[in-house]
Length: 130
Ligand SMILES: Cc1cc2nc3c(=O)[nH]c(=O)nc-3n(C[C@H](O)[C@H](O)[C@H](O)COP(=O)(O)O)c2cc1C
Image 1 (tube, helix red, strand yellow):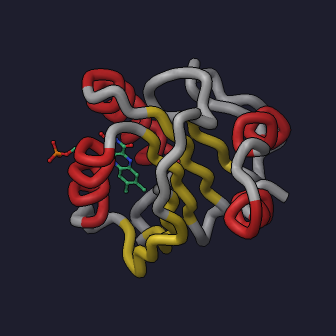
Image 2 (cartoon, rainbow, N blue to C red; image 1 turned 90 degrees about the vertical axis):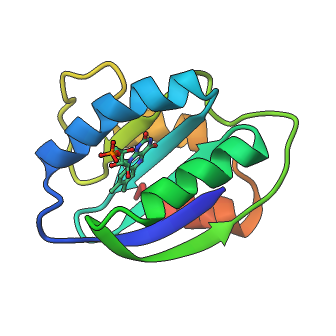
């Protein structure tokens, strides 16, 4: 699944890094992989895993008051995952420097993972990484 949303003003870089830390625990426990890109005023997140696990996590995330205008951009089934690890990768597309976090990726690194997303939805993801 891929959704887009708009962050609330309180959703700072630090809060996203905090979310990332919690997400590793939950996502790894539930066999979920994914990637979250923040452009400062927009978010896009890929969530991969068993359908019921993805649906449950999306339900939690979509009830999170720290973002709004959540729109599902893609839902589909594939034998293969885009992400090579369980957990959640994060990229701030406006940062050139690398944050000191195991699951933080620069946008060039992010393009490699998300390059596997095909078609229009791949283009949408890429637009968040330009
Ligand atoms: C944009 C965004 C993405 C998130 N992604 C995840 C995620 O991938 N995994 C996760 O466990 N929590 C994620 N969260 C956090 C959850 O919404 C929620 O805060 C977290 O599961 C803790 O819930 P609790 O405070 O009820 O324990 C995300 C939150 C936001 C705002």
